[in-house]
Length: 184
Image 1 (tube, rainbow, N blue to C red):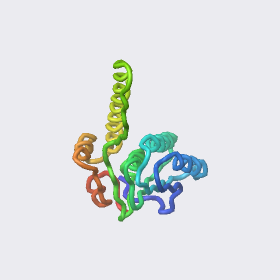
Image 2: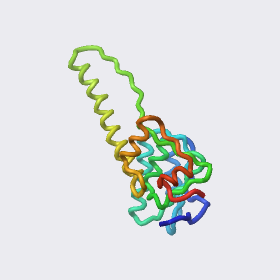
Image 3: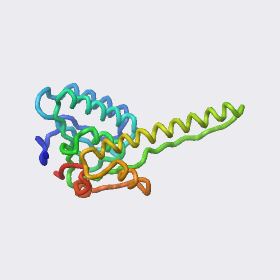
Image 4: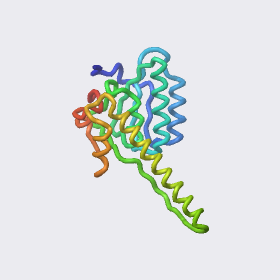
């Protein structure tokens, strides 16, 4: 098991909200990253768009399929969609600074439904929202499973933990739960 990171000078450094601007910055830095040797990917984020987080995570997974060794370095705070991004890196290559906190929670949704018109059209609107909720729950379960890979936790244990309340973990707690390899 890896217990050290190859460098404390990140090759890719992202911070701020997980959104399309972060995705664009990720692609820019990815295109400029060295082409041989391990890549250190640094992230500090309060979270943001879950789908953009999944998109960055998928890029990291695909990059690893090409044979790239990628190491994750979470600094100060890695919340919500940031944890989704972190889950793309194998647990043995996940590291946090000593001041880092993780936030794991259920997917959230804000929606208003206005029902007006024929009952069948009202029912269709309700069914569309239910389909969105079901899709979100499926993606959430898949995300928890990816986060749990190689750790001492199961996806079900993570899900159970966040059903009660948002789950904040300090860096040492993340190590104790085997979500990351070590604290830097």
